[in-house]
Length: 465
Image (tube, rainbow, N blue to C red; front, side):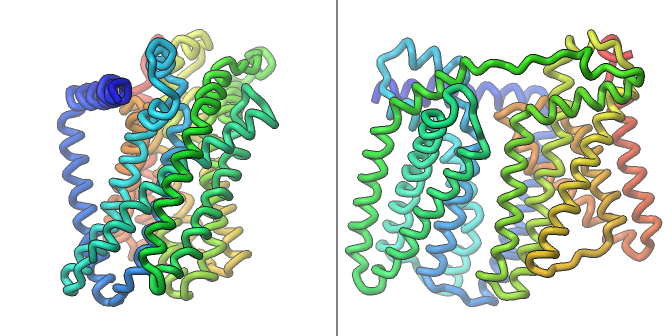
């Protein structure tokens, strides 16, 4: 327990507080504005959700419990995948190799805060439902509170153990040094689906034998703990083995052309194809396609339309924002290498903006095309949507230059950008929707403003000429 507290206090909490203090010193006004905006958006979400819940009148505990399990598994899965490389940080390696801490508490400490953040998000999402139940005069019983708490612990242990077993299996049968993120994530999703189906089937015992279901959860909790305990040492060993991954050779002469613009474009293509961000967003894109395709089998046509609009407005925007956000991150990380290229501002910036704009357009139109073929939902206004995507791309690229993106603040930046852009888009549509040409002009002028901001302020000599 001493070593566990030491990891949580000295490493995990120390890194969080240090990053928080640095951000508070650099961007105090921006953080206060972001916090105020987040609270405003969340208040709006609570009011809308509360009104919808009261009107719908859905207060069946079993149905709400099933939705809680779905959302918890989704968020836990996303949190584990996004924080998969934490063990590769030098602080964790040094501490594990120079202390008497065991593998099990070490792994639990490393994933403690990502999982805590996921549970916090679940709590914020389901807070309107709890308020709706209390307003309706329905007080959750002690039994349901116990079941929910135990289910959260069971899902956390089983999700982490599922990810560990997939990583070990891929390392053992495919490659010990390469990650193979897509294969691991697909296997991880299948195991999580099996866990959900098992719990969904076992839920039938609640109405007949509620105490037996509680015993079943205790059994699953014990099994998850034993599973995790048996995998921890091998998992840490495989993670340390992957630190020896060889970097692919790269020759700048092979992509150099007479045109500086084409040279930069080809260089960005190589960087993009080898980036972990490309793999992560590709997995998210496939997940969104599968999720949207399955909506008609679970929800009514009206609910399917609402959920599809939500996916396009928020989930798909994460991909459209995340990719161009990496332009600024790459610039901050590789300024010395960029200086050695001796290229101009226009060639460097324009090639990357157009490249990620093309990728975003491709992602958007492939998504709506696949959805149209699978479930028959047609979309309109593709011209305005293309200009809106241009504004997203330029705005995300500008944000990447202004804020130094890291693993710590990446999720926060993306959430805030989705909220800010949705708010700006809502205002533009409200004020200018009557005149399509004026709305298109606003999108173009906004994109141009962000481009000029990057070109004139962010890109400086002598890095670029």
